[in-house]
Length: 563
RNA sequence: UGGGGCGUCGUCAAGCGGUAAGACACAGGAAUUUGGAUCCUGCAUUCGGAGGUUCGAAUCCUCCCGCCCCAGCCA
Image 1 (cartoon, rainbow, N blue to C red):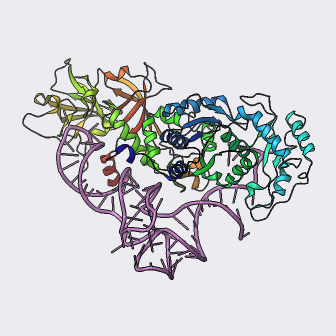
Image 2 (image 1 turned 90 degrees about the horizontal axis):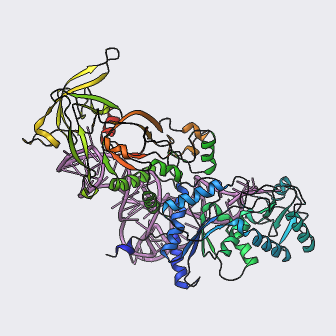
Image 3 (image 1 turned 90 degrees about the vertical axis):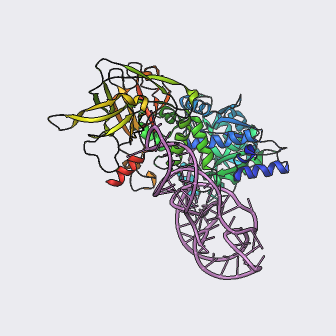
């Protein structure tokens, strides 16, 4: 019926917005923002938020701002800003000219702070960090009021101005909101609004030595930008009363509403920026963009498409349930998208030499092979065939177990788009006994894979012509961890890293058409998986392909069960 | 022992008092020049538990249980 309407996402946040639209809450206006702190590379968890915020804005004819929430100079940098901009763009979202920084609001925020002091709702506190903690009380016991809580407005104004001018050392004074030290919500026990940090900021340099805290800066930044729906994650639920309190004290008119949803957790990986940073710093991975990382830059390098990630974000839904999404769902989205888009080519990862005894020496044929079995529009390419080929080591077994129906002595199989071949002998390494060469005969009547007499074979193998093959390296990636939730296990999370999350194969052989591939190009290596030319280390002389994802592998399952 | 949230299939998730959608996963089968893709089929008598209200409850009420978040001058 109405495909467009029925396929629009729906969730509790959109329900709230629908209702606001109905009641005319913001005159029918919807404005959202994606507000990352530039202290790490964005990961797929951020993608969920990006898709939500930009998706909602688009759906309701509103706009979504990109705002760097940079209120703490330590750990923030331009490198991270650039990665965020690059990745949100790559995901396919556009913020027009609305690229904002909380640091651009520093002066305005300072003025708001002065206003709060003048209202008698904020004060400069001289307690040390330890003392503030003691005065704050505990979860079950109320806090005590600071001895500095009742300073005069004039004194507070004077002190706060002197904090700004750099008169006091780090940690000696803070500006606090004057709320309620006995509140059961610890967030409301005179929260800190400003701290002194004589630290250079990556954007404002040394212009400031006091920096606003998240709770004070965020609600006002939202207000300044005219945000209507301020969507954040569940852990900020406790902060919502404070978000509202600052706005109640300081502004008039229609105000943003904070709505919290559950952040994304994915099985077999970790999402915390701190943990990811640790993996980078300890060189467990090669960098933020290592293809094993759940970062958007890592996934891009691995070969994931923005469409697949967006589809995934849509499919997981939005709720307030703490959840751990099955990695298999992401993998399914990636395969689903690549299945449609990727050109099929042949590549042999672990080569095994095949000699076709009855094929004339020196003869070369070319087969025209379609790039996609279901989509002729994707064209075709020529693949050379000759007497000596490579096939996959896994495609031959001297003593085949039950249900293995690939090549074995005396058995006939089809070479994809080529001939039927029959194994007539093997050559073994005299020392190891390992099969190093397989001898076959071909049936000239079966050219391009059909037997005129209707004879069937059980398997079709991919292959490359030995003399024409392009040597390459393949990096086989798998899940980063070997347990669903490494953080919930005993001990350090790094002890649960998957030792086989990267396997490097240096003697792969590709069909000649792949010589033209450039970084970022994606293919399906038939029967193996989806691969992408690496954008970091691949060169024309030494091509490197990253395995994005294996194909689903029914044989692997059978083999696994047999063990 | 305080406050704020959340509990529907293995994993997500619809459901908003009228008799448990869908997706992934899993298991069978069909077809197949990728053991891929595709196509069928199966997969919650029951909604954390116990009471109660009602002709009727996953949806309303009561009590209980479990999990997550909050005591950074982080966000």
